[in-house]
Length: 211
Length: 191
Image (cartoon, chains in turn orange, cyan):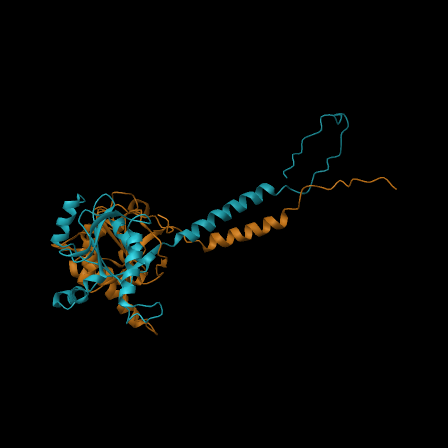
């Protein structure tokens, strides 16, 4: 028998194909990923086992902190119309440029009187903590009520103009911090119920049933 | 694995070799990096979308007219949860004046209120003759009334609602706390 040759195989594998695939996937994920908007008011939502997804569009979000409330709505045209209606009600006029800038703001938490200066700020300044004091919602000056009402009005009006209207009322999500007092949340819920909005979403984190 | 092209020290430094550059680049590190980034983006994109729970509050106007459901409901079907401080709650079955189960302090979660809910749901289902394949309109299941006090935290309310979802209680509602229940919390030291 001949000498047994120990074939010296190369240990390194050709990585080119693997590299190609990896970068293909990488570019896919980067392109599909939605850039996270800087939140002016980050909250730590409580966890729950319920896994209802929030709707993507036609959604208003009320973010509640210890004593501050922020408001945001999806859809740039809805935002513009809502701002116009609010301006009418509180006698504040906005230029077209200001409306345009406002339509790009995801969340805000200022008195409508200070909206001009908020719009004038740069996006990074707006997101700085402590800049926005929250929307007034006491009974004497309940602007949150009007924001929600006008957002619903704007969403309904714009929906009716579409070719095939969905006739879906604006959904409202409440995003509250885990450790805020319940009366604060109740205040917001009462505001919604006063305009006959009895159905809404509570934004929660995820957990399993073993707690 | 990763190869290092270390010049052979024994190889005699004198001979000038014509440099045969290895045309292949080692891609291992690059692949490592790419997969790391993929993992990162996958995790961040899936976690991006927040979860939520749907909440329907009882209509206030209906309450004012006085024809809301809970006044006509058998006391044997209602379980009241009064949410207090220190992540604790008091539950009782029936009316507070003549409770079927006297007010008891417990916590949230698996060790706390969940067993009570599961047990009571079973008891009520048995007493009312509910079966699993009954239409919802005919079922007369357990009714849970959640009363968060002023001192309770938001996550207590969410925890309570979560228990409703886990134990699939038929009917539940969040209502304002009554003075009697507030007194009860005071007695139990949870206010």
